[in-house]
Image (cartoon, rainbow, N blue to C red; front, top):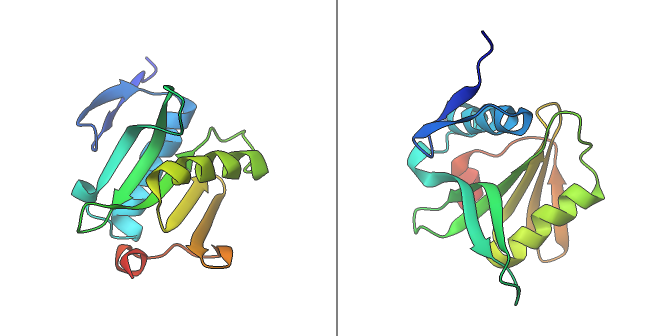
Length: 135
């Protein structure tokens, strides 16, 4: 029998096992195990309003600093979705509401890492540690 749900440690419940959710859960493990982000400093499916619209948006994963302010956001896509300018634009629109230092987009095959600077986005070939994200 095929698995139809997966436990999300951030939401503390089982959620439907979709291709995007598989990528989200994989990246949560990367954040926790490789980048050393404490689980209690991450949230998945973070809802917020943007602009004058009453439409609710949801960031796939938001990473918070020790002062509880958002430090990074992660946009997860299904593996067959290309990480193109449209996907990056979606993440940057979310950033307009959340105002983070770091933006990650991933489809599970490829991950783009970008840090905001005074000159715009600086793309990084490697994943920062949680401590580096706080600097």
